[in-house]
Amino acid sequence: LYMMMMQQMSKQHHYDFGLRNIKSVLGCAGALKRKEPEMPEQILLMRAINDMNAPKWVSQDVPLYNALLGDIFPGCELPIPDYGKLEETINQVLLEFGCQRVQHSVAKCISIFETKITRHGNMLVGGTLGGKSVCWKTLAKAKGLLKALGQEGMEKVVHQVINPKSITMNELYGAYDLATMEWTDGVLSSIMRVMCQDEKPDEKWLLLDGPVDTLWIESMNTVLDDNKVLTLINGDRISMPPQVRLLFEVSDLAQASPATVSRAGMVYFDPTDLGWEPAFHSWVEKFVPTNRQGDVKNLGDKWIPKCLKVRKQCAELAPVVDANAVQSLCRFYECIAPRVDVESAPPEQALVVLEKLFSFCLVWSLGATVTENSRMTFDQAVREVENVFPSSQTVYEYGFNFEKLDFALWEDRLPNPYKPPEGMPFHRILIPTVDTVRNDFILKCLNQKHFHSLLVGGTGTGKTVCVQSAISGLDESTWTSLTINMSAMTSSGKTQEIIENKIEKRIKNKFGPPGNRRMLTFIDDLNMPRKDTFGSQPPLELLRQWMDYECWYDRQKQTLRYVLDIHLVNAMGPPGGGRAVISE
Image 1 (spheres, rainbow, N blue to C red):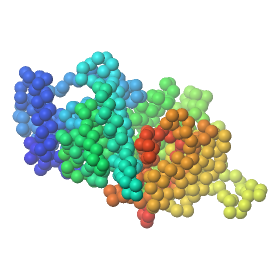
Image 2: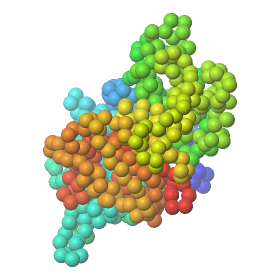
Image 3: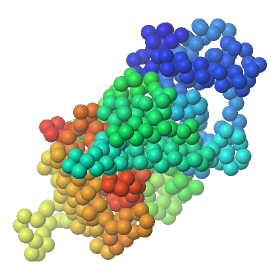
Image 4: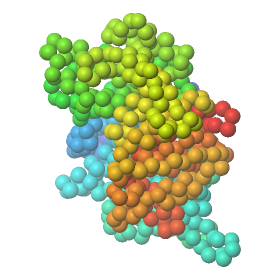
């Protein structure tokens, strides 16, 4: 079976058909045999092979795998195992998190549970917005709930998160100061030491959420195989008890060596399997008033699929994945909807107003990332779905008039004639155009609701000016601002230092801008930092860890720091020259 899979399956970086994989199948089969001694051995082996291999296939390989399995075990039906209480609890936790109970997510949670039984190091592989974080958080909480109910074999889960690329190799594992020969502990080694010395029966998960490359992952090889020992440069050996588990969350394993791939259990998440619908429906249930939820879901089904399809023919300066585009639509609608009272319109008009509002948000989310030349294509697609926009100009020329609850040209918002304020120095005069008014309106809407934003455009298109005008319009009593200009030499340590100089301690390990205000942090030239040998940009990984978990590590003391009330607005030019392509 393994020979046939090796020859016929597609070539993916996270596939491994070596001896370690076969050993894990045997381990799983042994556990099943002890649990259910009456089960026929053929079925038992079939189930063990399936449990260890099914979670890692990409969707196109599944039919081939099922056919191969059918050939090796003719006439055997794969029994559907009953997870009973675990499946119920996972569904219950998904509801608590405000997520949809999608069969795909439940199956992935169970796959993580299964692979964790045989391997102590597991990798969740897959593109962004494929549901990796939701699944491990759901499983961790479900195990805690089952422990509280007294189910045996379940323990409460405690987890710690690190992005290994947001700090240097020496800060991760520890190093000697070459001048004084003094040993400084690393973030990963100090967390591992604390976790491994803790004798409570709780399960401890160390989550490494960041790109995997041979530089740092090779040092984990002894931890991931049967030795279970982390060896440091100063001779310390930290052995890993059974309740400590490693979990990696990565987008791909292109930079990992086969040695690493064979040591870890794999669960593959394909973003297309999850799609955009679950996230959209969860958002509707959370944000839209109950009486309008059905209408907004219908509008989503009517508009989004066709517009996502046409986006594939459009060019983008910074490609955006479908699920992210739909997320932007939801956020922009959230900014604008409170300003429109749909219920005040006559009942027969209410739906029309709602559709106009929805289509306006759709143009400035799904259609906002496409280039100037592709805007005509998107304009035609929007008009083919439903002709709600006036036909004299493209859909991009119309804003939404909140008083009349209808479309109005952006041009109408321009002061006519324009007079610069008295006493304004000549070099500061900025004459408003349709573009500046549009961008200013959208950016201010996102800032008011505290949604991070990214402006992409060529040099000299007014990105910095747009953000500076948004900053100058902020209320001084509740906002403060900070500008960081990135260059090829910017390091993650430098970025962290610049931000930490502007914040103060609030309580315990929580930090924030002074005076309990929010800080608008403008990062210019986001894609300028030079990529390392393996293609990752450490300053961006640091920001990503902060955006996901609102924390990073103090590099001297190796302690966790929560950084609150920061709002990011980023600007970058198209890739090329010194600018890199940033990760999705």
